[in-house]
Structures are given as C-alpha cells and as structure tokens.
Length: 201
Length: 201
DNA sequence: GTCTATACGGAGATAGAC
DNA sequence: GTCTATCTCCGTATAGAC
Image (cartoon, rainbow over the protein chains, first blue to last red):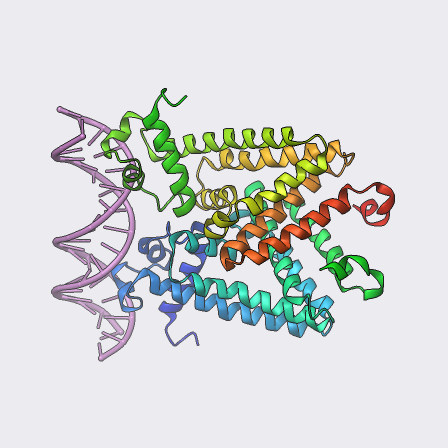
C-alpha cells in the first residue's frame, strides 16, 4: 500500500497529526504542506479542498479505530480483559492526551461548533467505540444495560481527557483509571453481589 | 453597572456567546461587530486586539461562575443539596450543551490546542468549580478524599457534555444525571455503609 | 500522462491612521 | 466612524520534471 500514493498518504498523516495538535480550523494548507515538505500548490493534485483532506483523515481514523478494536478483541476472550484494554488507552496515550485531549472528542467538539458536514463521520468514530463496548458488556451478560454502560464508560473516558488536558496532571489520569477499573470489576461481578442498584436502572 | 460602558458590555456579551457557539478561532471581529450592531473600527475604542476581548470574556465568566457558586451556597446549608445544584446544571443547560458542549471545557480545549496564553485564565474557571466542590465534600466529612472527589465529579460532568454534544441525545444526559445523583448519595452516605472501597483509595 | 513547483489574484481578518 | 495597510489563506493558472 505504500507505493499506491506515498505523497497522498503523507499528506493525510500530517493533516491527521496537525488537526489533532492544532485543531482543524487553525490548520492551513501551508502548515500541512510544510510538514510534508512539498509546495502548497502541489496539494491540489491530491485534494481539491480542505474538507476533502478532512474526509480522508476521518476515514483513516475510522479504519485505524476498527483495527484497534480488532486487536483488543484478539487480545483476550473474556469481556473483562477486553474492556480493560479500553480503559488502559488513557494510560498508553497519557502524554498526547495531556497535550491535546482526545482526538475523537476534540474533533467532534470543533466540527460541532462549525456546523461542519463531516461531524457525522467524526461521530462515527465514537460510535465504533460505543458499539464495541456495548457488545462486550452484552457478552458479559449485561444485555439490557449494555448500551447505557457503553455510553457511560465512553463519557467517563472523555471527561478524564478533558480535565487531563486542562490541568495537565498525570496523577489525575492514574487515579481515574483506578476508579474505572474498580467500576468495571463491580459491574462485571456476578449479579448476586449487587442486587439493589442495578435493578433500579 | 449598565451605564458605565454599555457598548463595551455589549461587545463582551456578544463575544462570549459567539466564542461559545462558534469557537474562538472561527469568530472574527466582523462577527462580533455585526452582532452588536457597530462598525469594526469602533472596536479599537474598547479593545485593541482579539486577545483583549478574550481576556474580558474570561474575566466575565470567572465573575459569573463565582456568582453562580455563591448562589448555590446560598441555596442550602447541607453539602448534599449544594452538590446536587452542580449536577443539575447539566439538566438546566441541556439545550446549549447538546448544541455547543460545555463553555468551560470547550474553551480550554481550544486554547490548549492554540497554545494560547489565556489558557491559564480559562482553566481558572475550572479551578473555581473544583475548589468549590472540594470544599463541599470536605464539609461533608470527606476531607482527605475531597480533592479527588471534586476532580472526579468535574470529569464526569465534562464527559457527559462531550458525548451529549456529539450524539445530541437528551435521554443520555438524563440517565447520567441519575447515575451522578446515586453516586453522590453513595459517597455522602455515612462511612459505616461503605467500608471496603473507600479505604483502598 | 502523472507529479511537482512557482506565480498570481480574490477574499477576509487584524491592526491602525485619520 | 471611515478608510487604508498588511497579512494569511484559499484557489487557480501556468509551467517544468519524471
């Protein structure tokens, strides 16, 4: 695949990184061109507009997310282990999260404020995580609550990312990961151990 | 206070709303000027640069937040009731949150990506909430854990705001508010009811 | 034909002079 | 409050290199 169009791939990679670190609005063609090391006019043979680059970046992120989820699915059979992969992502990506937040959440927030047509595609990245999480909760026997639990876990991770970027405190991330792990353990524990609270929901 | 400088106040109000709904980068002088109904050049009588407007907007938000927290403090004596005011903010501001996210979180995220000098001031709004929450948890007898609980609650609310904007689902907000209320009830319950988990943290 | 680089013009934004 | 200067960015037109 690298020989199909290496320049195009370089452009998408550079734009992906810049959209993440600087934001979509603040990133210009000149920034991307400089990062790739090509002239600005050269772009228009690969992408006709900035929105086309954004579409390509989101498509790449969708593919990357699917690959990531497949890797987590391959990492273990039990839902508990797979769900811990998701939580552990906060630690694995600690440094970029503290610097720039979550790439999915920050892009959705920015595109939402711009009323950008690509918001739907950006949200689909969230939906991939959500559906994968819901499927794992369902496999753990929490069928009815699985969608709500998936959104809850997704929201918790997003909240950690937002405050981690604002306050730049790695200890906060570590503390919240511990809380998430014990929450996971509680939720996934056999129903006998938690009769009251779950029944209400 | 309205007669001190009504035009300046109008500019700050309009900029505040536009920074929230459109983002800081995407909002230009022309947008604000049009919203206020004055000419662009007239700005320089009040603000020399866009960053100065941002400073004024953040200062106004800091003052507004302090007033809000004071109102919550006046609403009741018990920490439980006051903390519920914070959680209820998600319901009271449901519509704008689904449209534009949290004003504090989205501004910090944007300024962080721009490496903007005003990030520190924007983060101070978060700090006001954090310290107020920590103080309430401390008043509830959770002295040692108060700072961590405050950050945790702040993060939960931010996560709800991010996903609410991305998915635009009011039922999700309502469900998460219920979870937050039961979490609050559990945390604030007498220590006798929860001996194991709290000791670990 | 494909890819790349330079040059040019329009639009909009900030900043400031009058 | 008008009017101008300067800068950046987007888009295109043109031409050279493989």
